[in-house]
Amino acid sequence: MSFEISKLKSRKFISVPIIIVISLIVAFTLIVFKKVPPKSPPRSSAPLVKVIQSKPMTTQISISGYGTVESKQMIELRSQVSGYITEVNQNFQEGGRIKAGEVILKIDDRDYQSALAQAKAQLAKAEFELKLEEGNQIVAQKEWELLNKDFKKSTVGEDLVLRKPHLAEKQAALTAAQSQLSKAELDLQRTSITAPYDLIILEKLSEVGKFINSQTPIGTVAGTKTFQIIVRLPRKDLDSLAFNGNPNAYDSHVEIYQTFSDKHIFTTTGKLIRFLGDVDKTGRMAQVLVEVHDPLDSINGNTPLLIGSFVRVDFQGKKIADVYELPRESLRENSQIWTLENSKLKKVDVEEIFTEGDKVFVRANLKNEITVITTAIKTALDGMNVKTSE
Image (cartoon, rainbow, N blue to C red; front, side, top):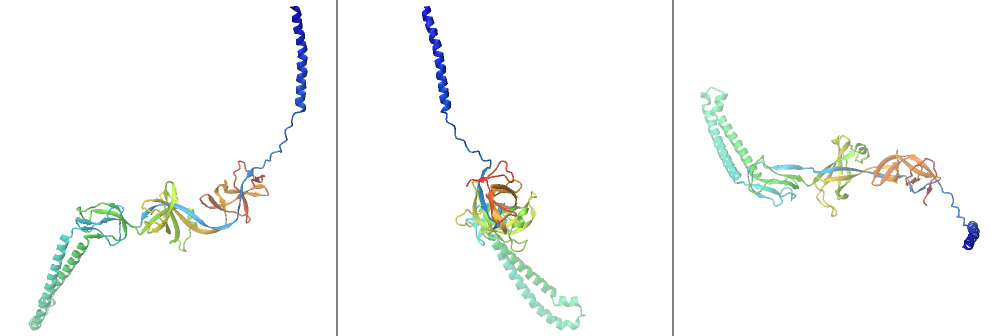
């Protein structure tokens, strides 16, 4: 037993040095044959940017404003005579359109026909009595001439003998009869209510069989020839509007867009007529008047302009020279842009003239062509090195 234990201890002492030697050999091999990783070049500190080229140009200012469409002519229809409605135009419905001169509705005219006949009879009677009195005047004149020497001359006496008051009475009666006939004819004419101009029915308040008078509203109508829009604009934009030389009478082409599903859809064109003399209720915005002719006529299948629509109006303003057209994102804080000169960033102060969609037009004291940095840099320093992505 003691022999076997001794033998095991001897083997243990022999194996330990062998393990150590093998470990040293492996470590040496790994160190000698270890691959050295390639050295990467030092990183450049200059940020990578995108740039565009821009040259000074002449362009026309585009200005946008908003307003609500109204009819230039909007009235509440009322009758000037009373009676029962006997007939209405088939288009006398909300949204219906009636041409100028067409009958909108008719009122029972039998009483007015009777009044006209009576007025004609009264006129005929007055004319007869006047002629009869004119005959009496001739007789009275002859009698006066025969009896003149037997009467003391008196103006009053002469007028009575010559029946001048009687003649004046008959003449007045004739005038009254003529006036009554004119009124009867006018009342009869008014039993037919006609459209004063091309119109659209906004509200219908009467129907066949209804009794109406001058206090009864028949409906609300609007003229269709011309609509108008009071457009609100920043006051600074008034100076940029183009006009024909008269500051109180603008005549500028405009484009009108309606909003459908959050999209502005071109609808029609109009004209800038004049600017109004007051600001809007907020006191901050100027107001200009735009007119649209034949607004309900579709242009190339576009949706007609409707009363009450809230629309965007685009104006063509004055032409301006020596401006740069840039992406809107290239305009930095404090009205600056970043230009690229000799691989360095340069901050340049500019004057923002106007914006149009995703574009901005600026003016600056620069050379003809510039290279503008469009990439955002977190910490941009004037004179810092940058490099382009090209």
